[in-house]
Structures are given as C-alpha cells and as structure tokens.
Image (cartoon, rainbow, N blue to C red):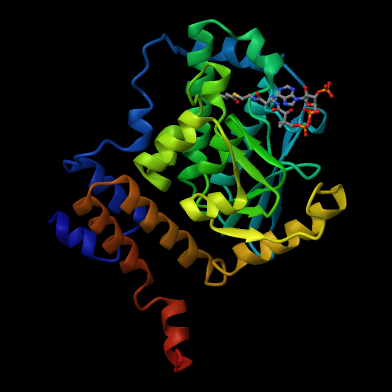
Length: 320
Ligand SMILES: CCCC(=O)SCCNC(=O)CCNC(=O)[C@H](O)C(C)(C)COP(=O)(O)OP(=O)(O)OC[C@H]1O[C@@H](n2cnc3c(N)ncnc32)[C@H](O)[C@@H]1OP(=O)(O)O
C-alpha cells in the first residue's frame, strides 16, 4: 500500500509524510536540533531574541530577482568587516524564513558588503553573551538558521571576497558552493580565539573536505588562500580580479556579475526541476541510503511525463 502510494503520482508532501512514518535510521535534521541541554522554552527564546536585538548595528539584506530566480543575501556591517551582530542574527533568520516561502526561487548567493565577506561573530555582541547558557542559546539559534539555509530547495553559493573569518568561514560551509576571488581568504580561527566552531562549521566542513583536511584547517587556525581552498575541495571556483593587492568597492559589482553568471549555469532548467534536484541531492547527503532512494523516486515521479519532460522530448535534442 505504502509503496503503491509512493510510486503513484503523489505530492512530495504526501511522500515525505510516508517517509516520516517509516523507520528512518538517521533522524531528520530538524529533530536533531531538539537535543538541547538548556531550557529553551518559548519565554526563554523570546527574551534571548530581545537580548540579541539590542546588540549591535548592521543588517542582513535580501533581494530576490523574479526573472532569473536568484536571490542575494548581503551581510552588511561594513564598519566591522561585516561581523555578525545579535541584531544581524535575527535578520538572518528572517531572511531564511522569507526564502523558505519563496516558491519561485532557484538559487541564492550569500555575500558581504564593501568587498569583504564576514569577520565572524561581532566581538561586542560576544562580550555581552559570555555565559555558557547564553553561548549555547546563540549557537542553537545560529545552528537552526544555517541548517534551514542549508536545506533550502535553492542552489546556494557563498561568494567570498576579502576575508571569511571565524563564524564567517562557518557561514560559507552552509552553502552548496563556495566561489572565491583570487585574493580572498577563509580562516577557521576559532581555536586561536579560545573557542570551537559555534555555528555548526566543523560538522559541515568534515562533510565537505573530510577528516584530515578539516583537522588541519580547524586546528591550525591559518588563513587559507583561495588556491589552497580550491586544492583542498573547499572552494569550487576562483574569480580572477584585476587588483591583486586590495579589492576596491568598485570590484564588488563585477565580482557579483561573474559570481551570478557562475551560479546561473546550474539554474537554467525549469524552476521545479532545479528545486527538486537540489532536494534529491540534499536527501542523499542527509538521509540513509534507502530513505534517500525512496525520496528520489518520489521526486522523479513528479517530473516523468511532465511538461518539461514532454517539451524536451519534442525538441529531439542531440547531446553532442
Ligand atoms: C561562533 C563565531 C566565533 C567567531 O567568529 S571567532 C572569530 C571572531 N572574529 C575575529 O576575531 C576577527 C578579528 N578581526 C580581524 O582579524 C581583522 O579585523 C580582519 C577581519 C582580518 C580584517 O582586517 P582589516 O581588513 O585589516 O580590517 P581592520 O582589522 O582594520 O578592521 C576594521 C574594523 O572592523 C573591526 N572588526 C573586525 N572584525 C570584527 C569583529 N569580528 N567584531 C567586531 N569588530 C570587528 C575592527 O576592530 C576595526 O574596527 P576599528 O576601525 O579599529 O574601530
């Protein structure tokens, strides 16, 4: 009965409901986030949000282009090299929620303002939430935001100019791709700052580059050049820029244009196809083998004989 339902042209929602009722060996991501040692009742969460709101300046801005289906998230705190303040953590969550509801999207670019990516947690905010409980609440909040970013049905790309330091380096790992300018650097400097990765970066880094490369990057705290990131599998593409020493603000528009074109190559297909393929790949990364295959079958079933499929067949395409 269940199998028949999955192989019929059922909605993804129905298929996922069925998968949830089956024995899935690895827990879904969202349920893993619920293992919390500190009290996170809604009143606690509200007062912590109020606390975050009161710390720091800056914003996280979102623009959505309905024509190409690509959104841009910009970390905007230029006086502090786009360090993420408490207020920006809240903005970030709102932006991700907005993208979750954006049915017309295919891709998203995460970038920083004024020619640099992000210098990590805003040290002023950090100074104000130094108890273990507050640290845990902050990490819990950012884990959820970044896990939701990671799970969007949009193909995501971190576009790194200048530096991605500490939490900034962690942010890059929440995206599907990392594109860097030739002068950009990524540095997991946490251990030098006396902390571990607070935004889930170690878990995601190991999945990207493996165990030994991750230990090397995390325990050395060194700043990795774009070339090294490419060699180690952390970066996917390097954009050469004209000014090798210092990136000017003017470069940002050019870099954005090139980065957008790079991401667009993966967003050419129909909107639903792009979203479904991203969802299938995400399932393969996060679910056990059999559950992922089931999910892939259910998603495939929506496309088979659908309008994009029929259009492609009518075109008699030769893949030469
Ligand atoms: C869970 C998250 C854990 C973490 O994120 S740990 C990592 C925390 N981040 C850091 O330690 C970064 C410290 N900053 C730096 O190393 C350098 O500023 C950086 C990012 C390489 C940029 O270097 P430069 O381009 O030479 O710029 P600069 O040093 O003159 O900085 C310009 C102004 O920005 C400020 N700034 C940079 N990073 C900040 C931060 N994270 N929080 C608060 N303020 C920050 C910096 O203090 C300076 O301010 P000012 O102009 O002197 O008033």
